[in-house]
Image (cartoon, rainbow, N blue to C red):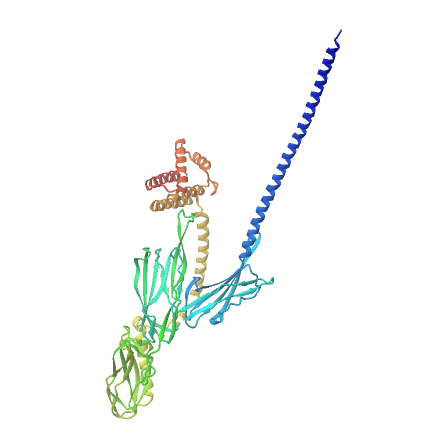
Length: 630
C-alpha cells in the first residue's frame, strides 16, 4: 500500500514541473515575439536606408542639374572685340586702314535686330554680316550669334566702343564690355603665345615720315621655316606711290631668328616715291607660294607630297607724307631729290624760216624723275614750240629728257636763254635752282611753211617708237610674199584630203586607246611586272628614308595585286595558303611567318637603325621569291 505522503510528494513534484513548463513556454513565447519584432525592425531599417539612398542620389542628381542650369544661365553675355582683316587680335589699329569689330551674343535672342554699339559712329563703318551657331548641352540648347562690322578710323586717337545694352522680352537687361581702340600710324597685333607659323611675310620702310616726292625704300622679307622653291611676290596697284624699281637683295639665305630657329630668308627692296600729301597706307603686298602638304596615301606605296597654292599677305604699314615747305616765290615745284645740272641743246644750229628743229632739255640727277611731268620753256617771242612727247627717263634713271619742236617765223640770229630748273634739295632742306646753258640759233630766209612742223613732229614720233620697239625688218627674209595669195593657191582637194587624214587619225587614236587598254594594260604578265616594279621602288624609298613602317603595306598591296584577298581581309592564314599553292616549302613558310610578324611590329614602332636595314634587306629577298613563284 502506497504511502499517502509519497503520493502527495509526487503530486507536488508534478505540479512544480507543470509550473516550470508553463513558465518556459511563456518565456519562449516572449522570446519569439521579441525575435519577430527584431526582424521587423531590421527589415524596416533596411527599407528606410534604401529609401534614403534613393533620396540622397536623387538629391545629388538634382544638385548637378541645378548647377548645370546655373552655368547655362550665367553664360548669357554680349562680348565686343577688335580684329584685323586676317582675324588677329589688334593692340593698335592703323589710321585709314580697315579693321573688324566683332560682337558675339551668347544665348540671348535678339531676333533680326542689329546690336546698337555705342561709339561706332566715330568710324567709317559698314555692317559685314551675321552668322549663328546652335548646339545642345545637357539637353539645353545654346546659341551664339556673331555680328561683324568693317570700320576705318580717319584720325589718330583713342576711341571707346560700347557698351551694348539690350533688354529681352522677360525684362532681363544685358550689357556688353567696353573696348578701347588705339589708332596710330602703324598696325600692331597682340602677342600670342603658340607655335610659329611655317611662313612669315613682313613689309617695312626706311622712313615713315617723308616729303611728297621723297624717295623711300620698302623692304619685303619672306621667312621660310619649311624650305620651298615656288614663291613670288605680288604687288598691288598703288594709288598714292610710284614704284620705280624692284630688286631682290637676298635669295633663300640661311639665317636664324630671335628664337634661334633656322629659316630661309628672301628679301626684296622697292624704290618708291609718294605722290600725294597725307597719310598713305601701303597694303596688299602678298607672297604667292606653293605650300607642301604631306599626307600618307598608300596606293603608290609611298608617302606622296601634295601641294596647295597659298597667298601670304603682309601687314599694312603707314607713311606720313608731308607737303613741301611753302615758298612765296615758288609754286608747283615737283622735283625732289639731288640734281646736278640741266643742259640745253638742238639738233641743228641753223634753220630756215618756218623750218622746225628739235630742242632738247636734259635734267641730270637722282630724284623723283617720274613726277616731273613737264618743263616750262622760256623762248624768244618769234619762236613757237610744240611738245613731241612726255619726258623720257634713261635706263639708269640718271636723267630725264624733254623734247620740243621749235619754229621761227622771222629770220635772224636768236639766243634761246638759259633755262631754270628748281627742285627741293633733301640734304639742305631748301629749294635749289639750276641754270642751263644758253643756245644761239641762226634763222635764214626760206620757203618752209607751217605744215613742215607736223612733218617733223611725225618724224620725231617715229624715232621715239623705233627706240622702244624691235625693228621687224631685221628679222624678216628679204624675199617677201603675199600671204593671202599663198592660201588662195591651195586647191579645195588638198583641204578635203587634209580633213580625211585628220578624221582617220582621230579614229586610229580611239582604236589604239581601246586596244591598249583592253589587250595590253590588262595583260596578266604586264600587271605582274608593274606590281613588282612599283613594290621594288617603294622598298628603295623606304630604305633611303629609313621608314620601315611602310614595309607591311608594301607586302599587303602585293598580295592584293596577286588576288589573295581584298585589303582589310588579308591575314596570316590566307597568305600561308597562297604560299602553299605556290609550292613554298614548310621551312620557307615558317620563315615567312617570322618575317610577317616582324613587319607587323615594325608598322607600329620604329626599331634601331641596324635592325631596320636588316629588315629592308630581308624584304628585298622575299620580294624576289614572290616575284619568281607567282
